[in-house]
Length: 106
Image (cartoon, rainbow, N blue to C red; front, side):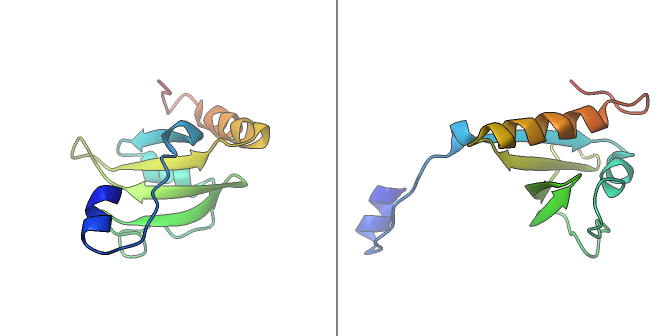
């Protein structure tokens, strides 16, 4: 991509952050119910349309949420930076909140 940008006259630098980011997919008919219990952000279709992203706080963890679907079901991806021990701890905490009889973590 940097090569194409230079060819087109743009001065940009891209940084691969793949190894610094964890992604958690939350899918299924009750996924929005679960997430709504962990945030004050409006997750309705109008406020958070399909194929958009938003920065939000879930259970005290700042994340980037993407409203997408690979299966045709309600789904979203939650992206969290893991560049510090705090980031890893926060993400593990978030996962622990999702382990309830109504939800399966795998």
